[in-house]
Length: 211
Image (cartoon, rainbow, N blue to C red; front, side, top):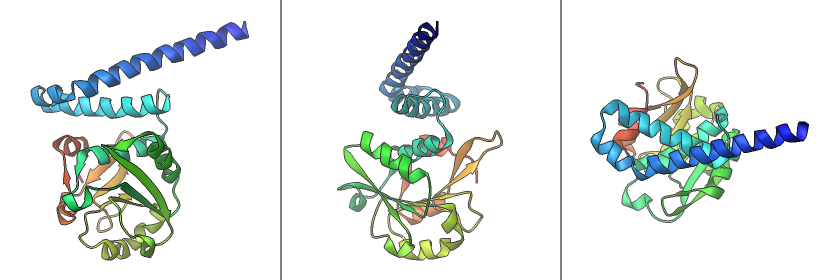
């Protein structure tokens, strides 16, 4: 009986993933048409579904744990943020400053995904001084209090600085927060984006919450 139950559960999980993969494929293939013809709310829903289905398809889980949701959003930044030409060649580099479980998640993502046609390279650094170059710098909560040092180091270079639960004055271009429903969300700092010569797509801007 136990063996039969396990086989049934395996079949249900496989069937569920097949449906998800089909939905994911349909959304990405038809995303341009949805974006062009749909109302703003439908555009936002389509992007949310595409992102959620992407992470579920990659990791094979129906509800991604929080750390995987971080990885999902980080990957969406590689797709929906535009870097200037001087930062658009070679490997796509992501640096994680400090200790964070997102580092392992991003390493897994980098093994399976690309930023367009670019290989994603993820490194961990233990101090701001170690940062040399990259497209994204993730600042762990342990370093939020030292954001002034981060800002001074990066200057106006085309680097997407990502912070987490940061206070006003210590927020990067993107700041992860918990929304009213208790779910992970993110804020976009448009002034900081412009300072770093970065441009968020309209879809990503609609997905962000007001800061």
